Image (cartoon, rainbow, N blue to C red; front, side, top):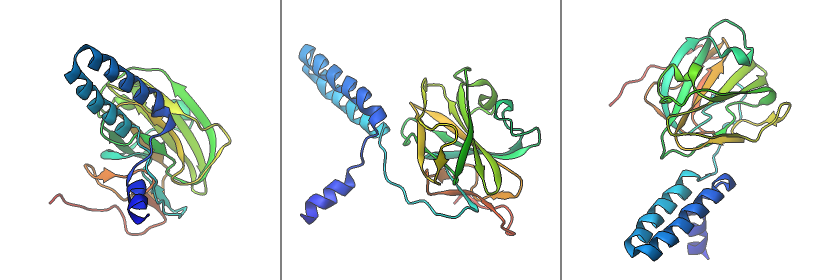
Length: 232
């Protein structure tokens, strides 16, 4: 029983959004294998990769309203003060923007960075540039959430990338969100931008790997100042 339980815990569940894709890859593998047997095994490798892409592991989120956690798995690609997208109606003053870039091997389930209530959700069509480019924040297809918190409004923007062609958001306006709660995903490579109001200091560095729902990316009410780090 202990061995079975260990195996069960080691298997990461697949999010239901991925079921159709895994099924398509599997059926395609069977068809290709019927035509030429080695193609079956190539197809099965791709099927396993698809299941891995849509994995949805459990996360342990710190419950502190002064902390902002990462909304996505990936690499911190930008930390800067910038004006948020106009459609979010967060004003014209610069806010702290922290960007998390997700490649095709990262878990793509998106989680709320804070506890609060969704006051607005805005979808905007756009291009599909490389999500690592700074101009992707303005030109790419995106879906933005505004979350009301004890520290003011925080913006979270799902940005489609070069390969991504589908942004999924199952949250709705007026929904309450807990920190770390799942609210959507983006298929096949993309980026998440978090816009935090004045009073928060970044707690990550560019190039750092973030884990959705667990890595603290910013903190309110701290007198420590920005984190200084080095690569070693």
